[in-house]
Image (cartoon, rainbow over all chains, first blue to last red; front, side):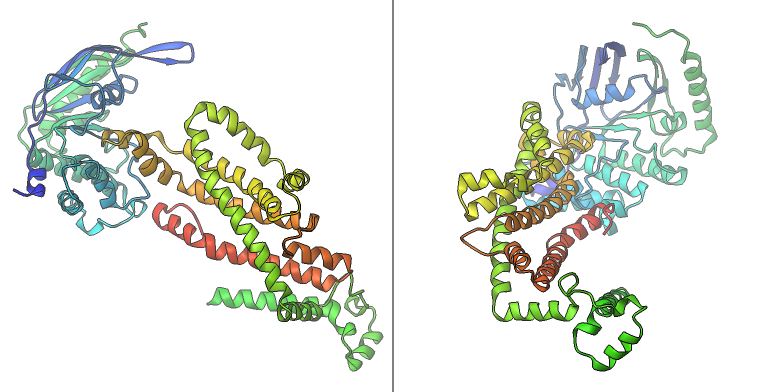
Length: 269
Length: 276
């Protein structure tokens, strides 16, 4: 078996467990609590969406799973091992433009692959091409980032985070800045890629419909401090269409719950 | 092509105007002379002292003569050598220094502050000290050029690094990049637009510093363009002064087009933001 086939093999997705995590931020003299005793577990190959208003700490939780931040209390485990730093088994797709403008589309995908010691350059290129193709950008592989549309950029970002073949994909409002048409297309593609590549996905969004469309489970957060409020299991067949009426029913239920938790409590210290 | 044509017409007109303002009466045109005498109401027909405003023809004659007797080429060579050495040293020192002052707080608080202070000091102010330390030598000139280049490059590099969106470094970390790798592969390329504009600005400072220094002091080891300009002044030879000024302008323009335009085009193509 050569390096490329081995690299492209589907790896076993991780199981995540978040156990009593709290996090505080200090801004000047004011100390605010971002997360309060959050516990959550995500199964292998599960697609979980974290939903909540801004300030509910969902992005903070995501960057702690990524290992970019660490909890002040509690533990985050991946397959039973505590997460202490970023690792290639957990890749992040950011909302902000985090692609490197000095590299071409495929150059961005290659960035993470170049840090994998077990491949040679030819194999890396082949792997990068595989992922560029997977996200449907083979014609734009050598384009500069500024030449691509917003949707295409997020496709590059998706390819870049898939390329090191992680066990977990962490997505922080990746489609928030896109128009509705582009988003719809990406919902379909993301579901297909998830089915093909078998990743555990934690997806942060404030768009309830998006969460209901993508997630096996939607976890609702309330803000100040961030707490887990409710969970919704979405029992709909895939691939799901964002415009389907069944999905709309779920979205309505979640939105109602979201509103009832919002501002119901004063900010706790 | 059209832009080129516009530029050519513009400069031709400029020279014609210059010639009109000065040329007629200085260069024997008997017919014109009588005409001009009869129309002295028009300012161009007044005889201007060739010292105050040398005609384009006499400036051209000086330039041709200076090229023929090799003084101009030798002076250009001396000057360019000083400039290149000092400038390259300034860039080679300035970029890493900027990276260090941006990376380490203690360096920013110390060296960074010195840089900020010294950048406000026109580097020709270093000439008296440089002469004492190095004598009337090339080293003194190069020191002045380095002091002109170094801080502007350091400051731009420093602010380039500080302006790199933190998300780049975070993204790189998730992909397994750490420490030096992040610096070489992420921070430096991300601050490239700033670094390039810094080394371009450094070039302008280096050029100015060197001209000021050459006009200011005589250096025994070589006669540069600044010296030619200076001796033109001493001899009341304004053809020479104006001719050298033109040469200085042309070298500056060429440097901009040859040294920096390719970089700016590259940045424009990749980033899509820097306008050329």
